[in-house]
Amino acid sequence: MPDQLLRLADFLDSHHNVLVLTGAGLSTASGIPGYRDEEGVRRGKPPVQGPEFRRSDAVRRRYWARSMVGWPTLAQAVPNDGHLALAQLEHAGRIGQVITQNVDGLHRRAGTERLIELHGNIHTVRCLACGQRQPRAALQQRLLRDNPSLANVLAQPLPDGDAQLEPESLEDFTVPDCDVCGGVLQPDVVFFGDNVPPDVTRDALRWMDEADALLVVGSSLMVFSGYRFCKLAFAAGKPIAAVNAGKTRADELIGLKLALPAQQVLPDLARLLGAA
Image (cartoon, rainbow, N blue to C red):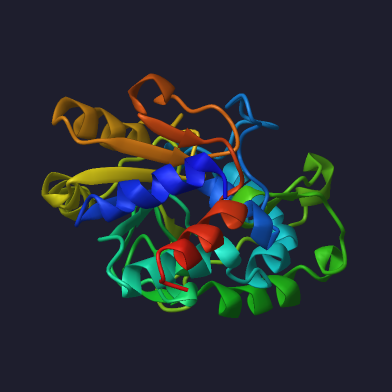
């Protein structure tokens, strides 16, 4: 058995309330593309920015068209062995809570209960005017009905249900609006350029304050909303471990790192600790 895996098991064994922070690298084994390569460099074009989405009809048209084409990849994704192992570790009392930067909803489907989705959940859509929420899967049916020319388009999947769709495909695209008040619809997620809601931030920081150690899984920590937890843990003298195939922004703060895929390490860890 690899020495690093034994050290990680000892890490969990030595702390009664380990907070787990997860990122996109955990969901790649479920078929959802990650944002960055192993050097932490972002792939592809810059993502949609929240302020631009709310201000520009053209940006909303681009977003929803790409989302319509890319949605099946996200909708069909299922929790992988890494998600399932974290749920097992939680149920066995080997970890405390999970904070995820992912919006794919796979942690909850895997059975994780003490969970904060830091950036929201893309399986819900909300109206910015009246606040009504609806399932993203239901909205997909409207998108397909109103935009039949894109119904069978194939495009490279991108993170968070996006797809690489060429701009000329969007000229006649019908953007969905709220079927209650006609307002602007937005996925119930924190776009780049937006802030995590204050109540979510408050709860997540409380969990970090209560934890006695931090385990990072599948995150490069290049986004500050995730990196801040490593800064807080380090400043408080709390040990940090990580399971991440590539480099992270906090490598100099991390005491134990397994540079391996999460879906490979976590099931072995759960078995070793009797949680599987």
